[in-house]
Image: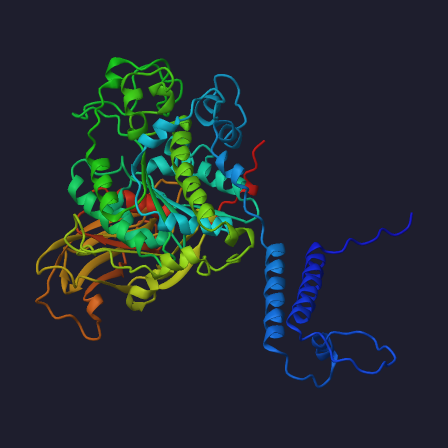
Length: 616
C-alpha cells in the first residue's frame, strides 16, 4: 500500500484562504479608487505578475510598506497567533454539556463505588447506592444560605474554561476528614466527589486535591495552623458547622472569622465556599452520638427507621447561625444541608430517611456527603455558565489559557486587583488573635534563639515521619521564642509543646519560661515503659505575659518570651534522647490540645489525583 498523503493542517489552510481573500479585496479596492488603473503605454512583453506588497517581502532592500499593507500584515499576524493558541488550548465543554453536568444520572455515574458484599459495612456505608435520591431544584435553591460575591467563583470558572489545572483544598473537622469512613482518603467524602466532578467535566488538565481537615478540631486550631494545611489553593471548601466547642461558641465564632479573613487574603485570592452540614442533637444535647436502634458495626451506624428520640433536633444551631452571619458579612458563597433538607428530615420523609442520609447525629453518611457535594458543584456550574455567557469568544479562541494561577484572565485580574482590605471584623475584637502560633517541621528552626546539642532531624518515612529538634545528652539545651507582643501584662495564655514519647531511648527534660513570660517549671518525661510505639504527645503549659520583665539581649519584638528545654541526667530508659516536634500558643486551651495532637499526625500530604483512584 502506498504512503498515505499527509493531511494539511486545518489552521494553515484557513490562513491561506484568508490571505487570498485579503489580496483580492485589496486589488478590487485599488481598481475602484483608480489607484489600480494605469495610463495607456506602448505594448511591452509581459512580465511575471506580483503584487508590489509581495515583491517588497522578497526584495532584499524593500521600500517602506504603505499603512494599509502594514495593517493587513498585522491582522494576518494576529489571526495566525489566535489560530495557534486555539490549537494548543483544550476546548471548553459545550454549553449543552455544562447544562447537564449536574444531572442526577451523571452524578450517580460519577460517584458510584464498587458494591460490597451484602450486609457488609462497605455495602452500607461507603457505596453510593443508585436508588438514593438527589436534591431537587427547589431543595438546591433552599440549600444556598448565602449567594455571596460571585467574582472569585467566576475567576475559578475562567481558569477551568481556559484549560488550567486547579488545586482544591478542604479544611474542616471529622466530617471532612472522614472519621466515620475510617480514612480521609475515602471516596465517599463530599470534597472528593466535588473533585471527581471537576476532573470529569474538565479532563484536559491535571487537577489536584488536598485534604487539610483535622478530626476533633475546630476553627480555634485552624486559625493558627492554616498555613500548615492549605497552600496556594484555587478553591477552598470550609466545613465547621458541627465543630464549635459547646462551651465556647462565641470564642470559636471569632476564631472562624479570623480564619476566614486569612483565607480571603491568600495570595491567589482563592474561591471559598462554606459547606455546612447539619447538627442533629436536641437543644439539651443530652443524647448519644448514635441514633436509636441496633448497631451492626462498631462505628455506631444504626439500622432501621428513625425513632421519635432521633427526631428531637431543632432548626436553631449556634455554630451554623454564627457562620451564616459571617458569610453574609464577608459575601462568601455558602451552602447548607440544613437549609436544603430540614423539613424533610424533621418529618421523617421516606425519600430522605434520616438514618441513611446521616451516619449519626454529627456525621453525614455517604448519601449525605453526595448531597453536600451536589450543593457545591451546582454553585460551580452556575459560575461556569455565567462566565461562558459573558465572554464566549475568550474561551473558544483559547485566550487566557496556560498556567500561572489565572492572572492573565480578565476575571482573575479583577479578583487579584480587588482591594484586600476586608473592613472591620464583625465578631472578633482584632484581625489577629492576641496570641497564637503554630510551628512544626522546619519552621521550628526559625524560632530557635539558642541551641546547645539540639539539631533538626527528620526520622521515619511517610505516615511515620517525625521531623523535629533532637538533643541526645544531659545538659543539651534549646531555647524557642514566642511572640507575646499583643498581650496585656499578666494576661494568661497556653503553650502546647509537641514532643516524641517512646518505650526506648528517651529521656526527660525540664521546661522553663523566661524573659517576658513566666510559667511553673515542668518536668517532661518522654519515656513510656512497656510500650511498643513511638508517638506524638502534646503537653499543655499555663503561661502568663510578664511585660515588665527585661526582654533579653538580642531578642526581637516578636520574640520576647523564651521557652527553654534542658535535658536532665535522670532517665527511665538509660538513654537521654528528647525530641521537640511542634510548638503552639493560644489564648485558651479549649479543644486545642487534641486538635494540636491530631493536627500534627494529619500533616500536609501530596496531592491526590483522580487517575490514582480509578473507579471500577
